[in-house]
Amino acid sequence: MKVITRLWRSSLGRKFLMALTGIALWGFVVGHLIGNLQVFLGADKLNAYAAFLKSQPGLLWGARLGLLAMVGLHVASAISLSAQNKAARPVDYGNGLPPHASSYASRTMLMSGLIVASFILYHLLHYTLLVPAVNLSGADFAGYYQKLTDGSERHDVYRMLVIGFRHPVVAGFYLLSIALLCLHLSHGLSAMFQSLGVTRFTRLGRDRFAKIVGILIFVGYASIPAAVVLGLIGKEVVK
Amino acid sequence: MKVRIKVWRQKNADSQGAFETYETPTLNANMSFLEMLDVVNEDLSMKGQEPIAFDHDCREGICGTCSLVINGKPHGPHRKVATCQTYMRSFQDGETIVVEPFRAKPFPLIKDLVVNRKSFDQIIQAGGFISVRTGSAPDANSVPVPKINSDLAMDAAQCIGCGACVAACKNASAMLFVSAKVSHLGLLPQGQPERERRVLAMVGTMDELGFGSCTVTGSCEAVCPKDISLDFIARMNRDYGYALIKGEPHRNSAED
Ligand code: HEM
Ligand code: FES
Image (cartoon, rainbow over all chains, first blue to last red):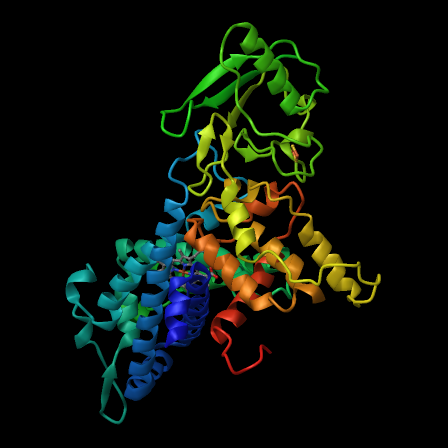
């Protein structure tokens, strides 16, 4: 237990927490993307995948609570370190220039992170808790069922996704948040190597890795609402 | 050539400071930036005004005393160069140059462009030393050092402790300085006995003094007059993580 207090009291300890929780969250972001891309395989595949997750309550709730704890720790260390960083320069420069050689992504990590956090809350209300008030189309997602040939029913996640993303404001906020998440990752994934003391890769290599992964994740996530809005998927749902 | 300088003037720590703009007398383009300030100060003295206080000592880029944030960048426009080795030919004739002191809570302002960097000494006192037997000099080359370690240790030992890394960092973090000192000693056999205590003590003191933390923006490395690499921060983080998890050595166990 003493290790925990030592970690939290030290600025570097909180950086370790941020980096470790950051990797775990990144792992989720990648896994979630791969799962979601099954939307392109059609309603049956996606709904079966969703039903499979629901059929494993132990795993599902373990992952959910674990992720919530990760986000909590990540945000708590981020806010605590940012406050310390702000206090370290009580009188600012008067030259009006951004800190020399720093990237836009690196200067806006707290903001991009906080907006992503607000998106995560919205996203949970929207597609996990299925609160009708936040989907802006008035539909009751909880009432969407797909009938199977054997007569049983399962939640029609595919239909929910298509109807959900057909609203331009919802799709817009989603795209903006994904863009900010990828901006966050384009710096965070590179920073993480340094925070954790990995000296194996050059800074140039780490930065390139982070940017490429950021762009791939953006393209992956953005493709879903884009395909819905452009009518490439889900036509059968809205006819 | 002539330039216009917009300089931070502040009587002392307790008074309110403000920018003042001065037209310089005619300058030789091959004057150093500090010589330009000397000329301006001579001119101010002749006019019965208070000269601008600024820090300087060796004027050859090795002592780490000169400072100044020039047009938003500590140590002026060049890479790997200190203010004292920055020359007026690097500026345009007639240009307005903004000159500010290093800004950080652990670097309190004394006067005009002079700040107190004693917090760096406190960090060094906390762990920037090794224990050696004093007396007659040891035989040369009696302690083998792998070439790669000695090269890296020498790179880290270039740090002149000027504080530009803190001044440049958006978080006023001293990580580049501390990591250079920790790595320089930690890479050599002579630095091993205190290696873990050193990194814990120096990082702890850095936190206590009110420096910020690292967010890997790279500003420090870009302004460092001695080109200290960000990689030393990663190296220190690794040492620190190891020492942190291990904790204080037990009384009845050897340090291993
Ligand atoms: C799915 C969500 C998120 C992922 C995948 C993620 C990922 C990461 C990663 C990998 C890092 C690098 C860790 C390091 O500096 O060593 C990081 C840093 C950071 N994150 Fe997040 N993050 C997420 C959400 C958030 C949220 C909600 C906040 C809100 C405060 C936030 C704020 C920060 C800050 C301030 C940093 C430090 C920036 C730096 O060191 O330059 N992140 N994040
Ligand atoms: S005055 Fe010594 S380094 Fe500039």
